[in-house]
Amino acid sequence: MTIDNYLMVRKRRPRRHRKPRIEIEKIESTDPWKPKSTCPDNSEYLEILATDLILDLPGYVNREIQRDRQSNEDYLERNIVIAGRPEFEPLPIDDMPFFQEDINQIFLTTLERQYRDNQVVELQQFHWLFLRKSQRQWELVNMFSIEESLLGNLPPQPEDSSNGVFARGIRVWLQGCYFGDRGQETGVKSQNEE
Image (cartoon, rainbow, N blue to C red; front, top):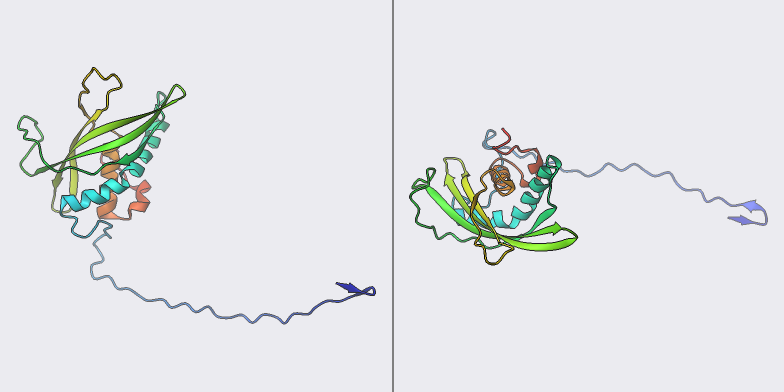
């Protein structure tokens, strides 16, 4: 600021350096070898675990779709919008080679948005999951999926989707749930990549 051609400068006092008040509390681990679990409480119950899985499933599957896109030239642009409430009433089956008494079944529906020829198409997909509880965690044993038919007169046929993007997303979620933070799932390899 100038007054009558004199430059006025306001002098400031030098700031005092304050020591930051940081209180660090040391947390002692009671079991240093056990990895941190981000699974919900009572996750040994499949119904409770599946509720959390359904909330996270679209994000995990969409990341697997993007990974698949990078290695696939015939990529169909798509994403999962939402996953519906799971059903746990098992179907009676005996003729599947992987099926054992300790296998649990989950049925769920997802809504997928596909982009074809400048059009947006929304399709429901129906998934039949087979999970088994090991000593340490739940594992996805097998999976079948049915896509809603665009042609109303043809009944859709179930396909083995055990190695598809849905199964990979579920396996990554389960590994992150039991062995680390689900938010850091990008560094976790799925069983199919090992």
